[in-house]
Each structure stands twice: as C-alpha cells, then as structure tokens.
Image 1 (tube, rainbow, N blue to C red):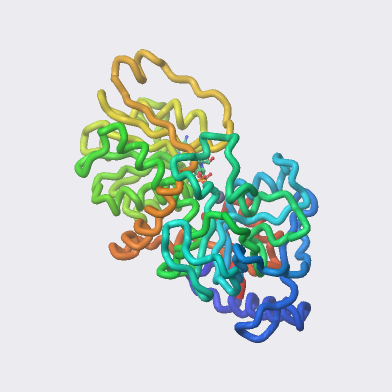
Image 2: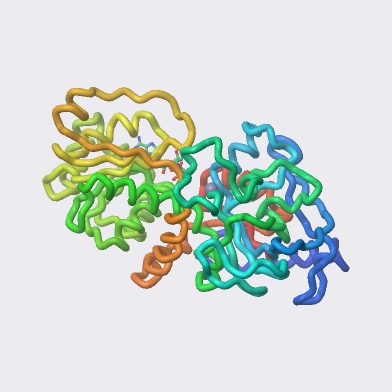
Length: 402
Ligand SMILES: NC(=O)c1ccc[n+]([C@@H]2O[C@H](COP(=O)([O-])OP(=O)(O)OC[C@H]3O[C@@H](n4cnc5c(N)ncnc54)[C@H](O)[C@@H]3O)[C@@H](O)[C@H]2O)c1
Ligand SMILES: [Zn+2]
C-alpha cells in the first residue's frame, strides 16, 4: 500500500480486515476501550516463511511489569533473515523489535522509564535491546544479557508468556527491561527509532575521528533506509554538501528529499576511475572529506576509498552481518592517503535517547522521515508484509494495528 499516495481503496481494505480480525477475537481483543482483554493476538513464526496469528492469554501483570497495547512495528533486516532461514534457530518465535505502543497496565513498582522520565498508563513507549543498568555496555560485548536478564524483545525464545514480540496486539514487558517514554513522538517516528539509532551511533563514531565538521563534503554510499537516515542526520547537523551514491534512480531521488545536495548513479559510470571522477565533480571538484559506507556490498567497500581525499575519514557500517571479504590496496587506499576509518555496529543506550531528539529536529526542518515507511499492513497480513519486504520494492515496511 502506498500510504503517501493516500490509496483510499487500500485503507478501506485495511479497516475491513481489522474489523474481521476483531470479529474473530470477539470478547477478547475487542474489549471496550480502556479495558484489558483476556487474550492477545501474537504473530508466531511457526515455519520458514510462515507466520500464524495465534491467540494467547494475557498473563497477570506483576509489580514490576508493563503491559503494552501495540500500535505498530517495523520489519527489520533481522526479521527478514529469521523469516527466510531461521539462523538463530528460534522457530516458533514471536518476532518484531521495532515496535511501539501504549501502556495499558503496569505494576505498582514501575514509576520511571530508563531515562528517568515518569511513566503512567496511557504513555507511548519503545523498548531497546541494550541492557539498562549499564549504559556503557554495547552490543560489542556479546556475552552480556539484554532486557533485564531475558533477551531482545522480538528475538526471545518462546516461553509460557508468549507475548514476547512487537508483531502482536499486546506485548508483556518484564521488570528490569529497558523502556522509554516517547509519548511526544508520532507513531511513524516511534517505529523509526531503532533504525535511526544505528545512524546516530554511526555519526558519533564518525565524529570521533575529528574529521567530520560543519563544512565537510560528505559522501553517503547506499541509499536504502540506512543510507537515507544517515543523510537526514547529517542534514540536522547542518552539513550541506552531501553526495549520495546508489544504483537506483528512485532511491537517489529519495536521497535528495532526505537532504542530499547531489547524487551519483554508479551504473552511469564505467570503472572506478570514472565513478570517482563523478563523485569528485559532485563535490565541486574535490574528493570527500568524509564518507559513510551504507551498502552490504564488498565492491562498495572497495570503491569508497577512491572517493575520499588525503587525510579524510571513513565510517563503515554496511556489514551488520558477514557479507564476505573486500579487496583494497593498503598502500593507495589507506596508508599513503592517511585515511582514518571507524567501524560502527548497532548503538548504545545513550544513542537511543539521542535518537528521540534527532527525530524531533528532523521534523522541525521538514525532512519527511515518515516517507521512509512506504508500505503498511495489518497484523493478519504479516506474511504478505514480509514477502513485500523481501521483494525490496519499498523501503521500510511496517505492521500497523488498527
Ligand atoms: N552497522 C549496523 O549496526 C547496521 C544496522 C543495520 C543495518 N546495517 C547494514 O546496512 C546495510 C544497508 O542497509 P539497508 O537496510 O539500507 O539495505 P538496502 O539493501 O535497502 O540498501 C542498500 C543500498 O545500497 C545500494 N548499493 C548496492 N551496491 C552498491 C554499490 N556498489 N554502490 C552504491 N550503492 C550500492 C543498493 O542499490 C541499495 O539501495 C545492510 O547491508 C545492513 O546489513 C548495519
Ligand atoms: Zn532492527
């Protein structure tokens, strides 16, 4: 569904579907507003490329727990991997970690969120995969445990609670979990928090080189959601010269909407020298001061050094998972050019909190972040939603509960 084109037919279909869903669960999820139903619908990945929407009892909310009525959840690359191959061996599993919703019930001991903000019934919240008690621990420490001794919501092994992922009507947030009150952000912004935090972290890593400045000429290579959010963050920082590189004209046009000043389609240039020349032209006759590598392509990694000036900087964040080896020439690419490189992976708890402010700033200066969510589906069409995600015809796909 193209939400930006206000496809009425599709919206009507969604409303009808959701009404159907309510009828199926009459007396449960369809309880009057304000009342907590006895059961919740949870999308369980029960086999490869197959979810079943199941109904489970909502457990008693303990003194430290929070029950959240889910409003929506984005589909992440990780969900796509799980859907296709189950690399973590979690099936059956309730997926969805880019979710948000409203607190409908909470235990008497729950008073504040992980940033010290007050929490009450009716507040809109997100969870975060970073353990709350130690903000300095990042995903680099693979032995750490997340969310208060459990693991990441949306990647938890199934248990007798079942309400473990955000692709659902309700999620059961256990005491000790990282949770943030984000009532001051709209629904789409809240769904985008998790992927945006990846870029807040990457830009912080880039800044640690001392090379990224207000007047830097910056290249962003790869204009999927990750590269596009990178461009938006650079714009909110006041950087004006942002050259976006991709092979898809549609994505490059989107890059301009997100704040890129110039674009280069690598498919228009034969050979790396011609491509580097095109990037140099787009940078007003200079090579870039700094570059962000946002593709999962080894060739992309090899190419990017050619776009960077002597003494410039590079942030490589395109390989969340192993994408194979890339060839570079250590003499020409790094040593003689004195390039400073940083890697970036996931984010810290502080980056998560910074992301809320970034989303507000982006809105203030008119960056259309909400357009990143190109397709939405109701929960009972979660299989179609994942297939649309795999087809890569859009950008961010989200499940939205009516
Ligand atoms: N560092 C992290 O923590 C982190 C977190 C999430 C995702 N990622 C990684 O970021 C990468 C991008 O994610 P995404 O969701 O935007 O993916 P995506 O596949 O939607 O976008 C990648 C883009 O790169 C373009 N591209 C491919 N090869 C290219 C090349 N040689 N030159 C220029 N452009 C090229 C594609 O056309 C596409 O538009 C993924 O590989 C993912 O693993 C990293
Ligand atoms: Zn994610």
